Image (cartoon, rainbow, N blue to C red; front, side, top):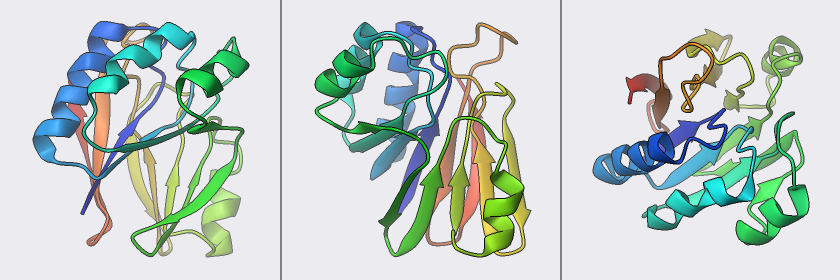
Length: 159
């Protein structure tokens, strides 16, 4: 089973649409957004997504009420903890607590954003993934990630 990861889209609806196409082509079952949608209109391309969707607010998200409304309640305050396919997942925007959360042994997958730099690492038994910046505004390199939740392996995918 595959899970798509995206972060830091920052209103770039063209890149979001590309990411949705990648996720649909790969047949992901869930997409996790690690924050910084920015504006509610940027949710529009997610309407074409053929998977479930969950996200968290980032530090640049403005109208949180409208983001929550337009996402049908699928965007949450951070950190957001949930279980999917028997894996314990936590999503946050800033990476400040990544090492401590991984060391706790309470999570199988930690997803974060904010740095705009794609990264995949394993800390003990926890897979830690930053999918990078899908919006490409800061470094000019748009990326997302796909996690094979059964094998607990992740690939960074350029858009």
